[in-house]
Length: 119
Image (cartoon, rainbow, N blue to C red; front, side):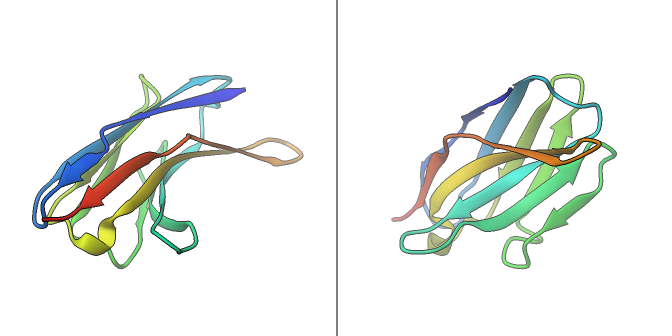
């Protein structure tokens, strides 16, 4: 019902930067939360950052001060600017969408994009 299209992953050296983007289409609610989660090798999927349509943000402690999440509500697109990247930032980054209905919370995921931080 909601489709998420991700882009921007790749290989970068430690200390470098990347920007991820995710565009939502379909039955997108006016109020929603979009964000990014990641899964490193052998790890569980974990929160990176989220942003509500009103602009409120939430960051994992490990990325705060280095990553910035933003969104364009007119385009239903969320961005993640990643600076001063570290090898431990390596993983598959998944775009996430959440919206509450009268009876339930709807959640959708992108297919993921690989981010590799290595020399």
